[in-house]
Image (cartoon, rainbow, N blue to C red):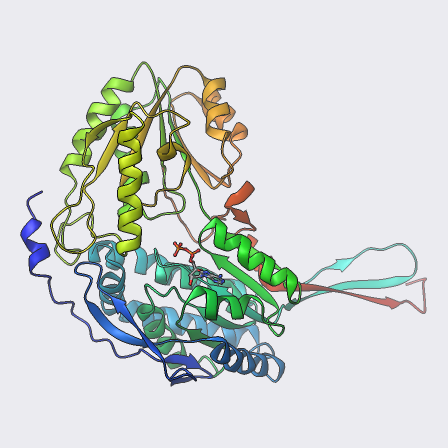
Amino acid sequence: YSTATDIEEPINPNVNVNYTQLLINGQFVDAASGKTFPTLDPRTGDVIAQVAEGDSEDIDRAVSAARKAFDEGPWPKMSAYERQRVLLRFADLVEKHNDELAALETWDNGKPYEQAAKIELPMITRLIRYYAGWADKIHGLTVPADGSYHVQTLHEPIGVAGQIIPWNFPLLMFAWKVGPALACGNTIVLKTAEQTPLSALYMSKLFHEAGLPEGVLNVISGFGPTAGAALASHMEVDKLAFTGSTVTGQRVLELAAKSNLKPVTLELGGKSPFIVCHDADVDKAVELAHLALFFNQGQCCCAGSRTFVHESVYDEFVEKAKALAMKRTVGDPFKQGIEQGPQIDSEQFEKIMKYIRSGIDNGATLETGGERFGNKGFYVKPTVFSNVQDDMLIAKDEIFGPVQSILKFKDLNEVIRRANATNYGLAAGVFTQDIDTANTLMRALRVGTVWINCFDVFDAAIPFGGYKMSGIGREKGIYSLSNYLQVKAVVTPLTNPAW
Ligand code: ADP
């Protein structure tokens, strides 16, 4: 770890914080209460800026603006081609401001700047263009029905969408939410995570520059139990989309059910198996298992956090996985070449350290890491455990940190049973050169995504979501459109049945 001194002297981000208020009806405004809260730099724990703290009164104001923009238009009523052009202009602006957006994202979240600038922002631009492409291709069907009727379906926007996003990918989650919702002609009230409010405000400013009418996209910074709960339980919100922890997902689903039964899509936690078979290309598997777990400081809902390795290649795999983790560059995420920045905040940091202690106490072998990195901010050394058993906490709970757990297996049926023995079902990685093994695992695993000899492939067209307690519904691709559309059946008698 050659970069420890960089933590002492954080690099100055090349961007200003210009937007800290709530965005309601196209205007930046203070919270009704006048309250603010600090957003922190995970590199140091220092305050970056004070941000307006939205609460239920602000959610009310934002929902009224979104309601009016939906009911009176022009957004849902304007031509799909016009909506498409707004989305395309927005994508161009995101591309133009790629580096400032990435800098803001790194500052507020702690992720490596190169990751934000070269991977995530381009993915966002691509995804917005993908949904722009859908805007003018959404239409209903003509349905052959018994009797003398002409039957058609209209695919209409669902109305005001409430969207609640997490802190691990603030801008990417913003894009996954607003892309399909806007392409379908809805209006939005989006609540960002309290840890990372900054980048979505900048992004929304660009949306208005691109010609988005006022009130169509409202962005509220604030906390979950106040602003988030107010949004989930609002009677004038027609649909709720949430990404976050499974426990909070259960809460918002309950709030939605108790208020107006708004349909809810949920993208929740995971404990994804990454299965390395005896015939896998071990070097490639080690490299991708490393990426699957350590990417984004391990703060990914789909992280490959149970690395199952066949006994015949286990020792080799563990040695190589350990060597790779020890080589991982940790330090100031603004520094070139840094692969791992700090965790998001002290709460997550403490939680991760607690899991590491439990791994040691339960008798897993700590191969490397296991402690804080540096003496400031929320850095954790890349950590690898081997000899992990299924009943250990580190093999059961979502750690959401840079802690790889390597388990051993003997045969295929055994690993299928163990991989599926969890309430989660978000994703899985499968490493084998054998087509039959790949086919068997692909069909047997009860998860929303199976990556075979690859991992973390997130093309805009590929649906993403969970089985079991990892969620309800799918985001991205064609599948997310149905989250934001109502289907209206229209039946007309035919007066001249001969035709
Ligand atoms: P984490 O524990 O990783 O912060 P959460 O699921 O609590 O994950 O947070 C994800 C998002 O859900 C954040 O925007 C957060 O503010 C919001 N949130 C948290 N609690 C609630 C709640 N009770 N109702 C609505 N939203 C909530």
